[in-house]
Image 1 (cartoon, rainbow, N blue to C red):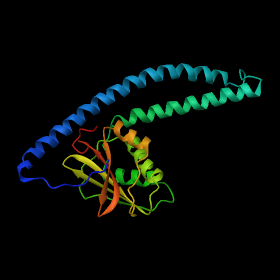
Image 2: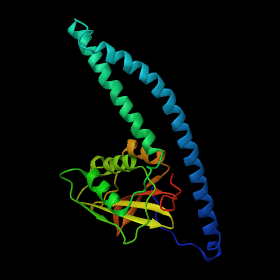
Image 3: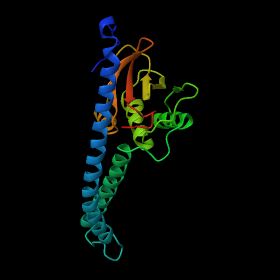
Image 4: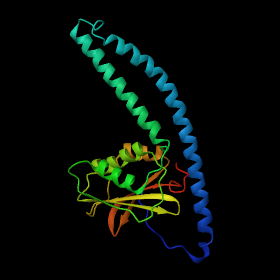
Length: 221
């Protein structure tokens, strides 16, 4: 969805703050319900996964490993996939809940550069005195990595992070004239974190903007 600033008619000027507040509260309420649902699903999946992992780990022990090489390879592959699933569950749960300590400006800058990885030219702009962001560090790192590595940026990346009346807004641009594509897994992850991702412009350049309502007020999604 592309969104662009539009003039607010004088007659709507008073109604706009009320509508924005109602929308923010709705998003925050949805984020709480989403986090509760993910926590419940995580518990059920983790219980079953623990049983599967225990059985595979037992079968993978040297004294119990199957003599048939094909069967041994199947057990090893199953164990690796089960361990991967456990890591993904850890990331999903972390993404749906804020970390204990809010992210300070140095944390956010480090996360952005870490998400870009080696070989990606990136600049990170943060205003002085930026309020701490109550966001999941693993979730934010993965979301930014999905954009910086998966969106096929046409040039050096620029990440701008601001506090917009308590909302944490992160804008990613990279020059060029074509709109930046949003990788579907990234869009889903941002939604899981209670945020929004949309196409916008940054100084006339196509960009992607991530918005996390209330994250800089201590009311994260």
